[in-house]
Image (cartoon, rainbow, N blue to C red; front, side):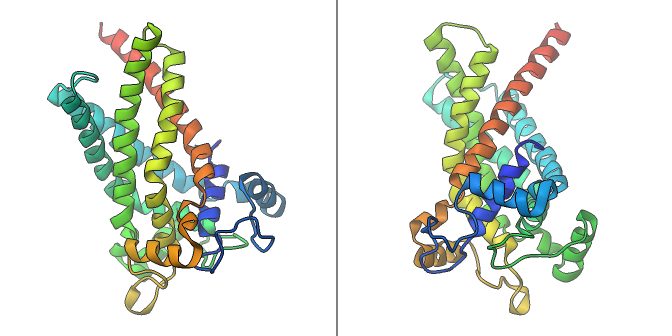
Length: 288
């Protein structure tokens, strides 16, 4: 999390860059603050230092601990409870996808407040974000949101964050299992570090593409200010956000930050699955 958080900061800022500005999808224009992942890392580091690159780190820890725990724990429990094995049948594969989506939905409900906090902290200090929230600390941010927006404030954007996590979980967990199984059959080898590394790397590509539109929309919904009656200042909901973005920034606008999303999620996916496989193997040996 610590190693990939700077890229996560870049992803968030690229997704918020040129928000609802006509022609803003043309990222090569000199008027934008960040011209790409490398330029954004350099510019944030130069102007805000290491602290700027690690904005939202504590919220990111809380997000991942709660999110990953529910997703992986719930998915593994469902697989064992229903006795579903990878490669048994097409129906079995669809069942794994459904189990991943179910565990992801649970994870979204638990972790939505932390994704919201992470997004707002990472957007703060951006040179090209339409709205920024100013919080002194993680604790004060949590208190301020509750005081100003009520309990519902912690779940702003849940309508698109839940599909984001469900889609990511459904694709990540089932795709990893499938790729690992096919890889071992194709290479003719047992489960190994190379197998885990290759399967997780390819899984990262699939997950990034599946969750990008949801991730983009969640970031914009959660970072927007409050309008009259406590509603969002810019968007009324996910579809409103997508339609306004496409109208002002083109279809490419929805895919802002995709490369940064993969550069963040790819290594994270590798670390997660490789470490998980080692822990699982160690646990199985202890039970023998």
